[in-house]
Image (cartoon, rainbow, N blue to C red):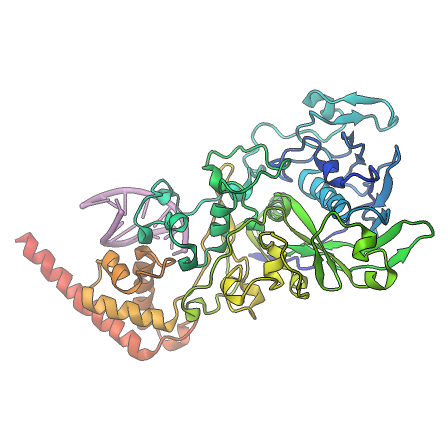
Amino acid sequence: MLEIDSTSNTYGQSEMIIFAEKWATVSSTSNCGCSASSTLGDSPCFGEHFEDKAGCMFEGKLGAESYKSKGKKDGIPCVIGSSEDLIKLDMEPHAQVGSESDAKASLLRDCISHGPFPKHCDHVKVVSRDDDENSVECTQASTISKFSRPRPPPDIGERKIKKLSASRQWRPQNLKGAKMKPMYCNGTYYHKDERSQNIYPFKKRKFYSQSPLCPSDGGFHHEDTSSFPKKRNCDNCSAAIGASSSVTGQVHECKGCNVKLSIKSFKVPELFIEIPATATVGSLKRTVMEAMTAVLGNGLHVGILLQGKMVRDDNKTLLQTGISQDQKRQNLGFILEPRHTQITPPVCTEDPSLLSGGTSHGISRSGTYYVSPDPLLNLSSCVESNLNKVPSLADILTGNNLPETQALVAVPSSSTEALAVVPFHRKSHSEYVQRRIRRPFSVSEVEALVQAVEKLGTGRWRDVKLRAFDSANHRTYVDLKDKWKTLVHTARISPQQRRGEPVPQELLDRVLAAHAFWSKHQTRQQLKTAF
DNA sequence: TTTAGGG
DNA sequence: CCCTAAA
C-alpha cells in the first residue's frame, strides 16, 4: 500500500485576478449560479472565461498553470495566487471585511472546488478568450464544451461526488428506523438530548447541520441531488477541518487608500491517502481529487484573524477593524473553514477514558482518504464574543468560545491527530459512506463487557448492551459482540502479538473462562432443544 | 431487530 | 468496524 502524506499540500493558485465591484461584498462574485454539487470530480470546465452578474471575471485554467483574468469595469484588482503561491488582495480600506474574505473564499471555492466555470451557467457568460467583450450567454453545455475539457460521459459514478458528505450515511440498514430505540439505532442521535450524545462528530454535524433551522446558504448547495433526508444534507463536516493561510504574508500599504495584503498559499489540511500500489496514477489522482472535494467541495468560508481575534463583523471596514493599519496587519491571518458551521456542539463523552487515543493513522480501505486538521488552526485563541453566531469550526478548533468538553471531537485536546479520522469509502456509484470513528475499548469498558458477559453469556448482546453499555451510545450490541470476539482472540494469542492498549491478563483470563463456560452452556442448551 | 459470522 | 444472511 502506498501511503501518501500530503501534509504540505498547498493550494498555490496560479495567477488569478479578481475584479469585484468596489463596494460589493464579493461573496456575490461567486454566486453566479454555481452549483454546489459541482465538484472536482465533476470536472470543472477548465480554460474558461466567465463573467458573472457582479462583474467578476475569471479565466481559469486550474488544471494548467495559468489562472488569470483581466479586469474590467471599476473593480478592484485582486491577485490571488501565482506560481509563487502568492495571494494578493488589493482592497480599498473602506471595503468591508466580508468583501475581502468572501472574495478569497469565492475564489478558492470556484477554483478549487468547482473549477473556474460553474456547472450550471444560467447566469454566466462565456466570453471568448480572444475577446473579452464579446461575451456570449452560455445557454447550453455545448457552448461550454467548446472551451472546456470534454466532459465525461454520464457515467460519472467514479468521479462524481454527489454532495459527498450529504450522501454519507451511517449504518444504512438502520437509517430508516429513526424511531428506533436509541441504543439500537443511530437515529438516537437525532432525538436524544444532545448533551448526552457522544462523539460521532461528523455524523452529528451532518445530521444537525441541515436541520430545518439550518439556513440555506444561498448559492452553493442548491443542487441537492441527494435523496436523503434534508436534514442530512448540509454537512460540511466531512471536511471537519479548516485550513489557514500558511503565511499571513507581508502586508504593505500602497500609496493610495488601498490596502494590499499579500498572502502566501492557502494550505489544505493534512491529507492521508491510502491506495493500493497497483492502482493507476489516474486513480490516485482521482482519490486525491475526491479528498480535496471532500474538504473543500462544500464551500468555504474565510475567517479573518486580526491579532488573534476573529474579525466577525463583516460590515466593518478595514479601517475600522484596523486591518489597514500597518502594525496591526503584521498579525493578520486568514482561515478557511467549511461554509456550514451551524452545528450543534457535540459534547464530550462522559468517560474520557472511552476516548483513549485512537490514532488517526488507522488504515482505511483501499483508495480512501481522510483528513486531519491543519495544526495551524490551533495556533490562535480568539477571545471575541460570539455576536450571536453559532460557533464556527475555527472557533472550535481554536478553542474559541467552547469549553473543552465541547470539543468538536471529544478526544484529548492534546491529540491533534485524533480529529477527523473518518475515512470515506464508496458504497455505490455516487454514494459515499462514512466509516465510524474508531474508538478502541478502554480497559474499563472491557471490564464492563466481561462482567456482563459473565453474567448473561454470549449470544445476548442486546442484553449486554442494556446492562453495561446502555448509556454508551457509541457502542452497539454489534460492537460489543465484535469486541468480545476480539477479546477472545486476544486472550488466545501471546502477549507479544497483542496490540493496542494492553488488557490486563486477569481480564483476559476471565474472557476465556466465560467464553468456555458459555460455549458449553450453549451446547447444552442446543442439546436440550435437540432432544 | 437481533444474532452470528465473515470481511 | 462493516456488511449481511438468517432467524
